[in-house]
Length: 143
Image: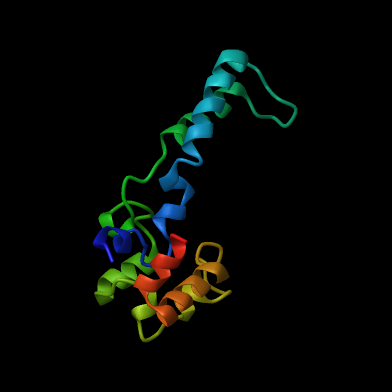
């Protein structure tokens, strides 16, 4: 398998090729919406029925329209405070499932402070990678 494809899988099992930050699924429509809002609603003091305003909307869309990952967490991008990333680097492993403690209470239990980030789907993805092997798992993503 090409090393580049293997490196596009994060420590937690996120696969860059399916991530909205990597594929421009978020950035492209944000740019389009930003242009529309600027063209039609950039009025000082404009406030919508829910309390939002054009200035805040434009600021948010500007952030989204510029947000993208050029490379994944193994290359230094992504969430710098990720506990899975930190743990894997500390243990010198490429994927969380390679750890003898996987799935650990710290990151993968429902009681974890990160349960909204490291959810059941990611855990199942890592279990599948562990079962079939990373190379086979990546091949399945391209079918």
